[in-house]
Image (cartoon, rainbow, N blue to C red):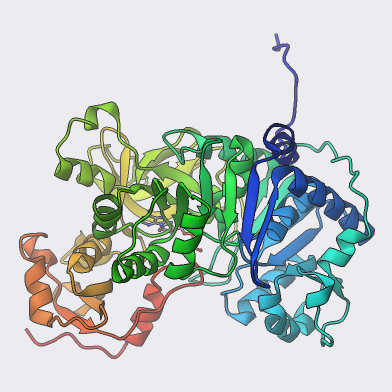
Length: 542
Ligand code: ADP
């Protein structure tokens, strides 16, 4: 017997419809590329998304066509999100920080029909346009006044002119909820980037789960500023979850430096934000130098790379801002775990609570996870055994776009490429990416643990730990570190700082100080580049 409830498909369109009807006056504020602040609300955003849907139809965009963006977090990007997916086409967010060759590869692989882009990227698009074989037109996300007088781009269109020509009325089509909605490519640190194709259904289920109190804890009383870019796994789903909860959104545009962020947090009364550790590093340094505080910020989500305990403490103790450590990946839409306490942890002392918070957190409902050994057998959830982390669930990938790389699943589970422990309470802790693991004397050393110790040193700004070949031990860890401006620290000082904080045999063999460390297009330490830069490095003689 079947239930007798409505069979309503889960569609992204319903998010913007809901936000319009029930949170119509709630603001969306953007710092723009052109300069200044743009302010409107969910009702106006929905209206403009409908105009844009009409414009897309007029441009000949058909269901399943890919429409790419090269854009910052802003209201026009938000409109493109909803108009493209809502029309049954696929929004393909491209990371503009990728190498130009990778952008060309991705756009051609996705067979993008149109590219919507911010003014910032005009020179980039002018350079790449001749190589983008499937693109019929380029839409500059600005008004007529900011259009270039001349450009080498064929079929360059103006966003606002397109919208002006259209009507507000548009009936969003009723789609199969499994219809593709968004496409994101992984950054491809090895090999070519691969496309992850989200559906309306997977995006909606993810949006529900992400909003829960033990996930991102979103409400109609919050003001959220996503620092994480809308080209990095859909800003971790915030443009969807915030519409679901009727949360005020604040978009920083290209202004991601500490000063601009702090100003926007204060003027817009931001309560919650989300981003990778590198961004917070910049903000915290600026705040310290300028002796500033936050007056409304209650929480930050830190993910994408491990949140160093020193950062956790700085936010919570110096600024009274709660840290939500989160883990996920492009292949998971991206949210997998968030670190929040259970009732039994509330009575713990401060240090014991920090030990919990340093973990990547518990699986949110919808994500099932397990760790397996080299033989593929499940390992115990005892907080000690570590193995390959596998996941499954309705917003986890089954195959890459165009079947790139073949079937990625193992017994129905997606192997994340992360090495982790799971404790009896279900808290997961990443020790490494499998390709960054350091193998010494047949045992594994966690580079993340060592990095966390290094950046807790008051004179260290940033640190990466990599394994280098050793004749006896196979590999040994070394620290590659950047000093804070004006601070002095020697190799001996730093190594001494590790004493008592790690197992003796984990002690790094050397410290190499560098002026800066390379990052990937998503703001993570690029260990691949660091290893290449140090390819001629030799360990000091014992
Ligand atoms: P990209 O490298 O393209 O940005 P993703 O954003 O999909 O790719 O990165 C996913 C990976 O990032 C995870 O598999 C994991 O290795 C790492 N990661 C994400 N969040 C965390 C975290 N909180 N702690 C440690 N590693 C993390």
